[in-house]
Image 1 (cartoon, rainbow, N blue to C red):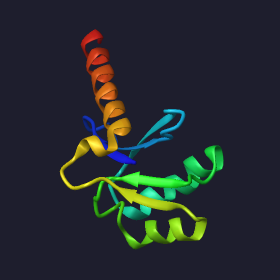
Image 2: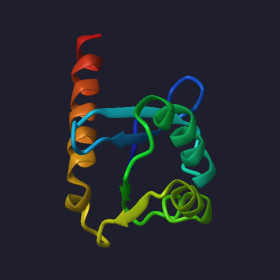
Image 3: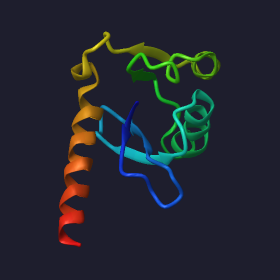
Length: 114
């Protein structure tokens, strides 16, 4: 899991939650209104788990929204291991970081076409 920021949308949203299955490389980029732990949990419950199942592990940076009690409860309740990158090491979440770079490049190219 990771966050990236985009240009603000018409409704003001600029945060994008990036969820990646490391095995298949399947990624979802979900625009959300803020980086709160409750919203991250809601997205996992409503958007990821019903379609792809409960993950064995959630890996993220050490942002407070990913380390919050509600995320810990979600993991404990569903038997999910929680892991985190080491501080100041974006490469520790390389699959998400690579997707973020590709997403930004794609959107840049699309904006140049318009």
